[in-house]
Length: 204
Length: 204
Image (cartoon, rainbow over all chains, first blue to last red; front, side, top):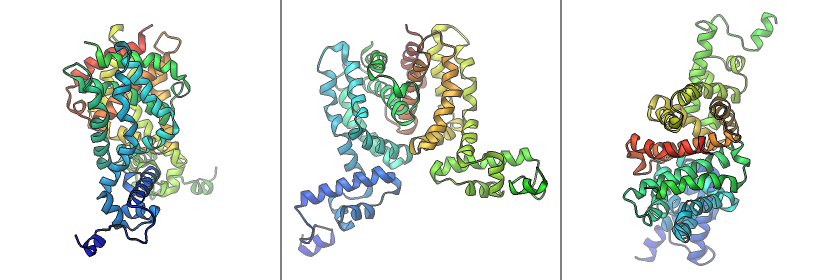
């Protein structure tokens, strides 16, 4: 590839500050912020580029289409989920439900991880393309990896039903804010939800 | 109130067709359609009035603010929920979980009831005012009435955790469309979920 074609495809120019890695990170941070604030539908590659202070061609160069930028942004949001199987299955087998519940609620309890997760969920509920990205990532990064540790023929359905209980509680507690669930002590909720998650994952 | 003040507050004029009840219904149908299509934030009283072919003042006359129109529209969506306590508690006590699961999934399985429900959920996830309306109605029309039939001190929390399992499954099956959950036979799902709902509602 000559310098001229590289330029056309949006490779970073010398006038843009910092190493390519920095520029990529800056675009990704801007993408997260834009998707978080405006949702998938109302965010544009042009808007992300503007927020990052770069040319739109550079966004395409590093990430591709808007869907692909969204996927890269959501991947960073899902990064903590990569630890889930190790956390959930490291310990007594009859406490798998409790560890899964505490792990996922831990992500929701912390505003630093909750805010981008909530933004992704909003986009997924509102837009079919964003839902597909969410679906792919939640399946590959979390559910299939939890299911892989279960010695059950219908392990994937089990992992999904367990996650459905936890996501349902998170929705009603943190998004809809139903009382008394929204103000209930986390230990009270875990005490009620852990046996259910345990049942979904391991009950014959 | 004189005719003049009634006119200013938007009472129907003779030139508008049909009885007042018809006009109110037409506005409500237009409101449901507008909220469903555009979500709470992007819907305006003016847009609802236009879709219904009436003056915006008439929308205010019958329903009040945009929030109140939304509440009236959501009430019609929640109307089937009013039957829930009778359906859920009419039968053997150890099948309460199964009847609650079948009742709520029945609403989601039917596109006629699913479409407006999904629209309301989308608005609630995206907007704080819409979430408050959703919260008030789901609490008063469904959860408090189910809880009222449970002989338990923490009946409301129990009803919410049971509903969280069912809403979580509905979200993942009908909105995010996770596989294998999205294609699983309803009886398979009910067989797994009913004991969990039963446990939330009745387990000591």
